[in-house]
Length: 80
Image 1 (cartoon, helix red, strand yellow):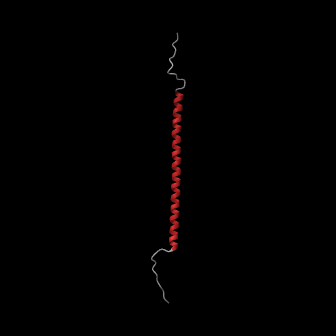
Image 2: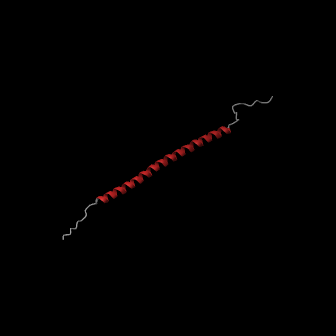
Image 3: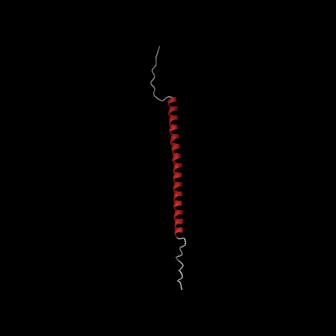
């Protein structure tokens, strides 16, 4: 009875398929994280712009309210 001992000098097909599957899963997770990061960045930028425009509107409104009733360009009539 002859027993042959073969040295394995490479990867089997199953090992290659498993490594390909794991690499695909890691890449899918990384892509999902990247897409979520893009969405969160866009949302944060939108919130920042909204706050900036709100601040501007409040400043303009408060200035208008402070000036309400002020007629500095009209000289008051002196009583006779």
